Image (tube, rainbow, N blue to C red; front, side, top):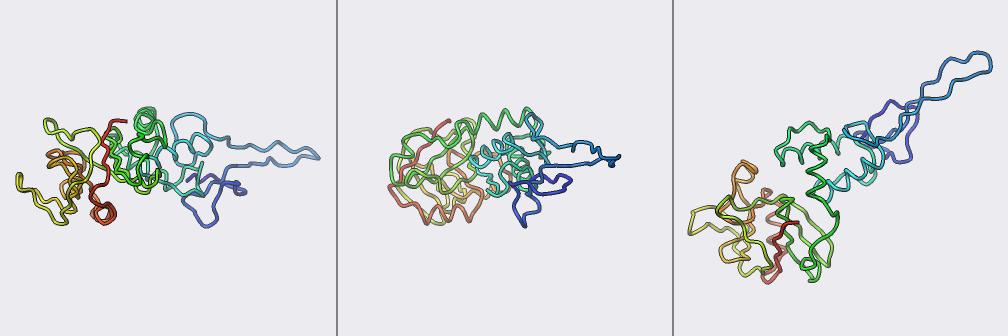
Length: 246
């Protein structure tokens, strides 16, 4: 996080974490003339946009909280300090949302981030009232694995293209296929977990290669094969699937 010129560490800094260490003050002492000394100049916390590397304070902590809810966590030890990890998270969020990946949070980035992450930590009751659920947010384009009411995994998700939109609603996984190929479209759908007829959660090589440029035939695509495999091995048939707009 922030890298200010320093004379001493902030209480929020983390030893050994250079990219995310918060150094909160830049003290410049004037030369002593007789017995009079000038007051130190202190860099204040950032309280307005834009936010960028080197800033710190409660507004940065709010930024990090919203990013973490969308699947871009930063170390707890760096909370409130905008350093390398937070900048990388901002760039990833911007790229996902067709924004220029500057790593600086301008008004447009903040507006989209706020829309997708509000309210932070709140899920539909259908996701939290059962032992396990796949909670799929079409507004934020994320899939969350929820266990005992707590989010244990968050990953990017992609949905159906125009005219083949993924249905919203509450479903259950009715079938799983480890190395599935669609009999309708010929698409490779490894780690497929079917929840609504032919609609499934699965690893998408196209999503991995092209991101959000394309869309599916209605399935929920995951672009990380390791994550898709983890989900496949963790989520049994019968698990609730909730697809919704937040």
